[in-house]
Length: 267
Image (tube, rainbow, N blue to C red; front, side, top):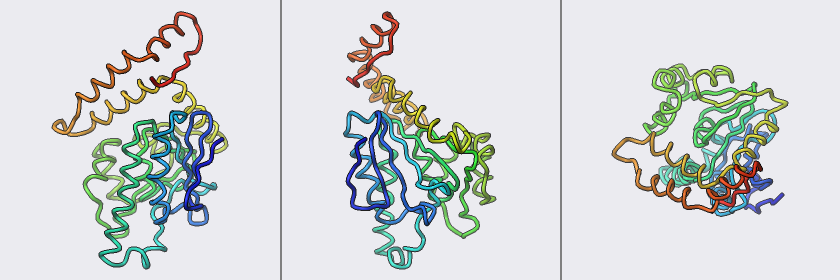
């Protein structure tokens, strides 16, 4: 296992068996994201993106109470009370969100307990969400008088559809894991005791597949949910061509004929 050296102890990043693990490590505050955690996220994502040993990334929360319960409100008085501070904070948290969403490798959210507000927004940056059966989901903006921007609502709506998006925002209530699964907010619900093993197994399945194929598929889906005028289909076509031109395509054919597991190299 390789452990990344970070400037904060509130985030943990390590690599094991082709999987990069990013852990929100503030369990006493239910993993509420502090300013230094927002700062660390791009560094972690960039490291995983540049590491050929990392085939898939999993993000999780430390402890047994929460994935992420939102932003760390205890800091707002000192770090988010003036217009200048708000601008810096929003720029920093925005950079973290863009880093997660721009990762070309698959990103999985492993969820326990609370996944609400900003925590739900973080989980939406993932390609797949696997939750324990104690997962709780919601956006309490309507209970706090907060405005929620178009891009965040559109991202949720793209996943669950307009009717469920309205229900989530209008009621501000918490939804349990089964409700979240029913509306398509999560891909899979597993017992608490099985969460890490199931997520690890899923991540390792993906890590064993052809990286260029997975990368092209992620790009195609991401372009597909954009407005038609914004889609970059030429780049997707180039990525598909790269799959057919790759050594991995040759290896996949050979492995199939030889009835053995393929050994993909991502080139």
